[in-house]
Picture 1 (cartoon, rainbow, N blue to C red):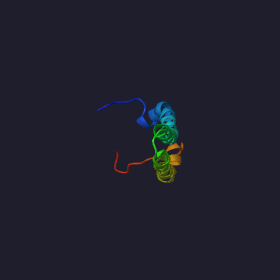
Picture 2 (picture 1 turned 45 degrees about the vertical axis):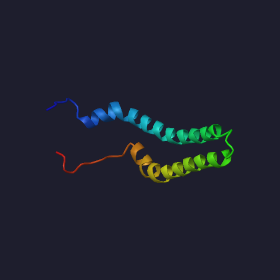
Picture 3 (picture 1 turned 60 degrees about the vertical axis):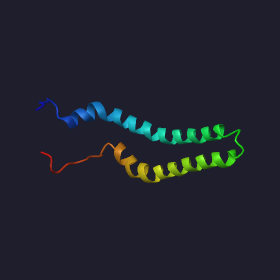
Picture 4 (picture 1 turned 135 degrees about the horizontal axis):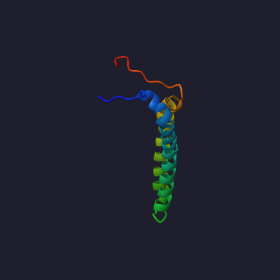
Length: 95
């Protein structure tokens, strides 16, 4: 068993919470940027192809649909809750 001078919750709030929130925000910005780059790469990759407009538009549409799904479902559902300083998860069965 580990004996700590300070409880884990206090340790987390003082040392880890701000880094975790920064990582979550970075991940939240990284998803849309990755999908935007993916759409741009599709246009460059299919530039010489005879059906470049259709192929690149298909990849762009998939990226946009994925981005809309991510914003509509995941970010809207969890983003504000996880970044809120008042957010608390409780386990009623824990001691």
